[in-house]
Amino acid sequence: MDDKDAAVELEAVYTEMLQNNLEGLWRMTREVPEVKPYLWRWDVMSRLVNQAGSFLPMEELGERRAVFLFNPALKHLAGATQTLYAAIQMIQPGEVARAHRHTPSALRFIIEGEGAMMNVESEVVPVHVGDLVLTPNWLWHEHRNEGTEKVTWLDGLDTPFVFGLSAAVYEMHPDVYLPETKPRDITSAGNSQSLLRPVALEPDTAAPQHLVYRWTDVEPALDRLAATDTTSPYDGVAIEYAGPNNGHALRTMGCWMQMLRPAEHTAAHRHTHSSVYHVHRGSGHTVIDGQRFDWKQGDCFVIPSWAWHEHVNDADTPAYLFSMNDMPIMEAFDLQREEALNESGGHQEITSTFDPAKAAG
Ligand SMILES: [Fe+2]
Ligand SMILES: [Fe+2]
Image 1 (cartoon, rainbow, N blue to C red):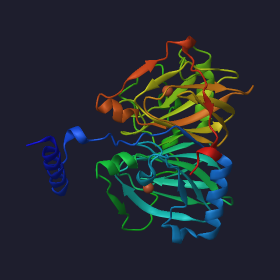
Image 2 (image 1 turned 45 degrees about the horizontal axis):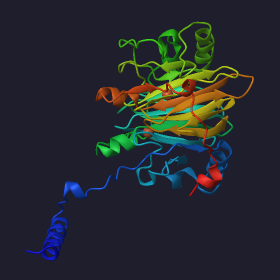
Image 3 (image 1 turned 30 degrees about the vertical axis):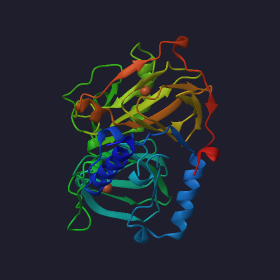
Image 4 (image 1 turned 60 degrees about the vertical axis):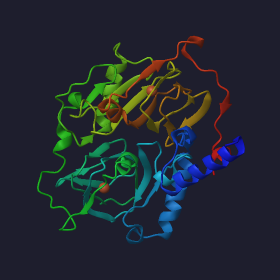
């Protein structure tokens, strides 16, 4: 057989492979989507959620007036990263979302507005700006706005991960709304010291499951931590919302609050876990793989897996960064790796500045 005949015959083999859903490993191109660093501006997110919400009553939205943040590489996965979903949700006075539960775990970080109530497993908890509420896998939950102003929060879920495992199960409550069988707000009356762990310390694996973490506990805890030497060169004054799952708030997601002191500039590092950040207060910038991302209050940004990053507070007041991450998943499968940047004094060279107008679309 000459070379030409061999090539024709091989092409026929390849064609027949594809017809039978088979492929040669040597022909495979790498098609894993590359999660990109990205930043969403608060003024844009807030305006579009409110504009869409003014046209659409809650009933037409399946009770989900939430606009999700999709990574440019992951539109069809509805993921900010390969494991983390994030959305901005707004609820009007008087609105109620019916009780349900699901295998994806969820968190809510309150951004603005007073009057929202979360009912988790029949305990009603009023929530305020800066509070974090968890709805771990399969706990019943509903929410309502009993106040007089709209309330906006950040939703975080592990749905890209759970959908990837085809393990998402969802159920509405048979009674539509949850009974209120426990005293209001009993959970958040716990000891805040046990709720909040400096990230520089080893986790306490015996920590109980908390559902609510109050900003009024977090802010003074950060101030106390700032006065100690258990701060992190990579993360500043950083606290993890502690939980029973090997020290993380949820089995699949960890939650952090970081305070960057005025002019603080952290050292660069990278790790296999990915994170979605939300700027609770302050302004500054984060350099991700050499690209500068300027942020201010309300903005959200993504640090992909294994991307170099360092944070800078550009203001003369503290900056507070809330973040969720998939560290528990990485640890569960022994995939957690972390590396410090040793060259250039531990800082990256800035090669470009992120412009949302150019990056969109
Ligand atoms: Fe839910
Ligand atoms: Fe980091």
